[in-house]
Length: 264
Length: 264
Image 1 (cartoon, chains in turn green, brown):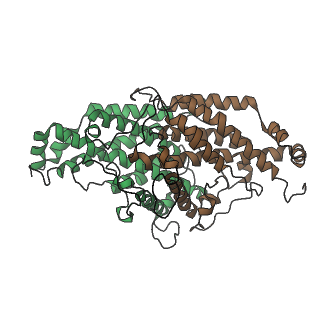
Image 2 (image 1 turned 60 degrees about the horizontal axis):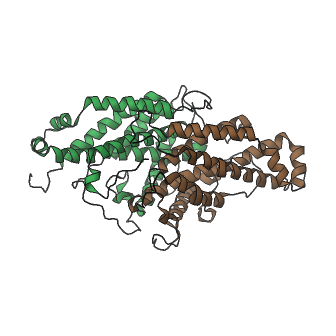
């Protein structure tokens, strides 16, 4: 049975086998949510500030729902967890629950690529996921549903991509000397090469293709037509955005890794 | 490609072919969410009032998150849609967006079996979905994640079950004389028999089994073990709760169907 990674135990949380398992499991989550989103048209209006008039706010409908969701989840401690990264950090409020005590797993850092994730999602990923065969017209009745699923997709993408911090920390601890040298030389290209494994990346893309085809097809043949989602759209989401942005997270995390340490 | 049912057009919304398609599609949604929930232990504490101290509230953590989510979604018109039914009607606030104008599809009614759905879910469904092989201990770090997915599961179950109103309305319009007689005689058993098709119910269960096995298995073999979810737990969710509660919705909806009409 599945089990999520145990963040209350630093040695487990930084075990590359556990991290790899969690990343593979998150592929399912992301694929499930993208399949759900593909039920609705693109509904571009919900991403435009002022596209729908919201009293006392100049946010787009999506941003309004996203920031309100984060505010709610912050109250129950979501963003205390080291694997959660907010899209609207300034909108968060203090948790109403007693704090949990996570062990120090990651080095202190402020890496947050959520602006890039959101931009990629709205402008590049969504149009491929939603533009199936023929672009369907906007459906105002579905604005809320579409935006609510967007929150789920983006939260899972963000969690997957920022898991790069755990990967980077684990690699840093394994090959400390090598990374200290690269970081001191501010050799981002060298770090990028040190963390890249093209064979593994291709395995991820092959697996995504299989998952999107499998989860996107009603196995009983009960759907109106074959696919609930464009398989290539899911694969390209990983190829063009998830994998590159994860590497950005890894590199930028490592660039902050020596601060306040013996190696600085 | 998938498309959700069009509730802005009464004739489409009451077309049994469209309703059937939507119900089949919702099986995928429910299965996806249950698979996500199965990643976490049962975490019984989150369903107990006072189990976790919440300032200024005596709700359980789950109820608090559920009601806060509904309050947020109500603001963006979720519960104006005839296929959405709230769990905490008294917590809802007036939408901040301009109202949408749905055509009159359903007869006025106050059927809401969400209390039964919530009770079945917490006390019967969850223990089978989460109790995989060995019961895992509570994980306080996952309370919020578990409860957040519970909201998604319950919303999709509620939507699926209350779709019974559309089924009932469609059947009423097709066999009006037959149903008027049964309703006037307050013959709930007769109505139940008139809406029951055992062969179709068995088809649903067979399909669920296939879906839970397919979506619950990593097709690349990348998971630690075979199933992400107990297939029987998903099938029994439908057999013991979704199908019977849908019939309750249909019967109770029909019992209110003559109010204010020529047949009363």
